[in-house]
Image 1 (cartoon, one colour):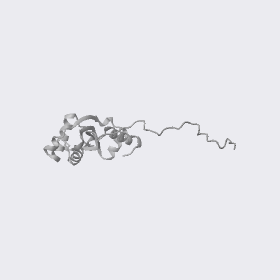
Image 2 (cartoon, one colour; image 1 turned 90 degrees about the horizontal axis):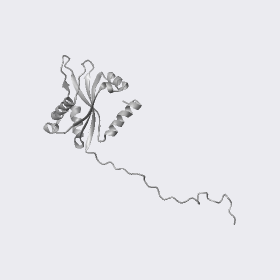
Image 3 (cartoon, helix red, strand yellow; image 1 turned 180 degrees about the vertical axis):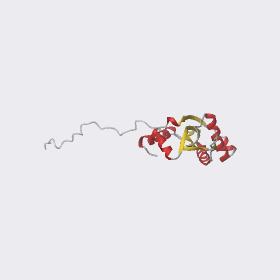
Image 4 (cartoon, helix red, strand yellow; image 1 turned 30 degrees about the vertical axis):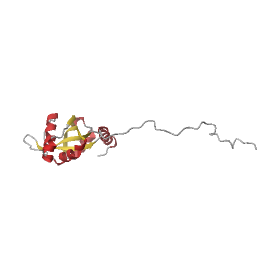
Length: 166
């Protein structure tokens, strides 16, 4: 019996490859810290308020002590970054004007992972601080995002800039 070219398997002469194997593996362990992105909201009629590390720490300590007492005041908070709203994109500024409030400052903080839920609840429930001046307006802190991995939070913010999602 003769073999024709149609009967020959073209792949039979190739060497057999071993099973596939992963090139790299990565296991993400639980992070020691959590991160939060905060904004300080002021009414659009009020004058620009400056925010520094000491003032933000005071606001956060007030919120935590009102919500959790001395236990809340004892939560260690690291302030990583504070920026002026002039650093924001034009699209974010238009969204803030539509909400009838102007964001004065944006801040990133780090705190122990087990305290993130209590921190978010305390900042959200905090009624605000009366600003000094003739307007007697309230300055309010808002939690924009919170999570265990800073890279994921930063990526989420950039995603909103790219896709225009609110």
